[in-house]
Amino acid sequence: MTHSSPNPTVSVVIPVHNGGESFRKCLLSVAHCTPRPEEVIVVADGDSDGSWRFAEEMGMQVKRIPFPGGPARARNRGARMAKGDILFFTDADVTIPKDTIDRVTAVFQDDPDLAAFIGSYDDAPLETNFLSQYRNLLHHYVHQTSKSEASTFWGACGAIRREIFLEMDGFDEETYRYPSIEDIDLGYRLKKAGYRIRLVKELQVKHMKRWEVVSLLRADFFYRALPWTRLLLKEKRFVNDLNLNTSSRVSVASVYMLVISLIAALWDPWFLAISAFFMMLLLILNRDIYRFFTTKRGIGFMLKTIPWHWAYFFYSGLAFSIGYTRHRLGKLLP
Image 1 (tube, rainbow, N blue to C red):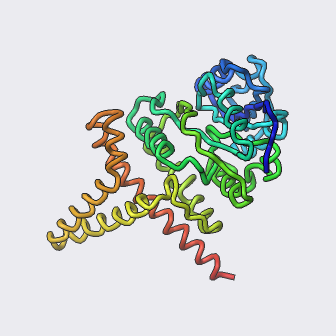
Image 2: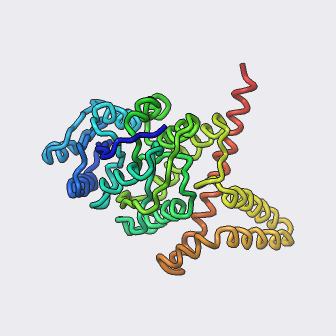
Image 3: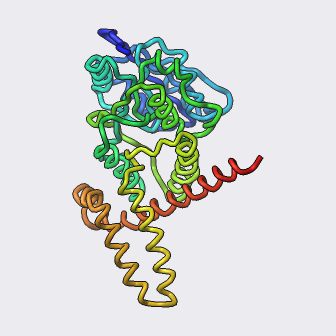
């Protein structure tokens, strides 16, 4: 289907729950865009710190929801208020480049058959602690090395034609009542309906979130890996893209073989040779990303990322095993 609007207008939709200073920086970055968007709609999702007042003071539209229900519901409410041809979604802890609106309209003008596109985090996250740098650089690397024809959507920097968004009934706010994979779910439904999504690597936004050990593990395991496994098994869409590529799958298996061989080495030291083999295999499989970390932050930083990267493969595999077991039991039980 061709969408021929010669000069599409853009509505920016931002969900927020107690955004604080990061949210103020987000709004300032949107306000400084040239050209300006058609409108900026902020949806305060059970906001209790008055963050919504920042948007009101800047003359932006504000929709307040008394009780938090997650970004899926908040984005849907904002989208239904919007008048623009294009919905551009971003998060309250993200700043966007000054030319974002111009880039958004140009992408859709140049590709009339395109339904949606996503961007990427940049390689200079605001928070300087190790986990924040590691997590955001990993995200940047994955997007920058993935295929341009995308298989999913992304709510932190994602644009979609409003008519198509409404046709798809937006994000699934019943299933995803907390920050999770509601954007991935939307992307899968778009692809299933025959729509195209692109990854526009040049459009990069800055993430301001501070990651700590507990918040990172909780988000990765409970809010992403487990529900994503459930979605994969439901839709049977094991595409070779983003975090699901062949190298990542082999890395997951290799990490488990490494753990098993290390445990076995407690009884028989000969298994240390097998452990060394799988360590070497993991380094070879992921050599490009370790080279990337070294280039960006130095060899010391890269060496610190290795145990975290391997731990990521470990708990991703654990989540898939749990999800697969639940899936099979769900089919067997009445």
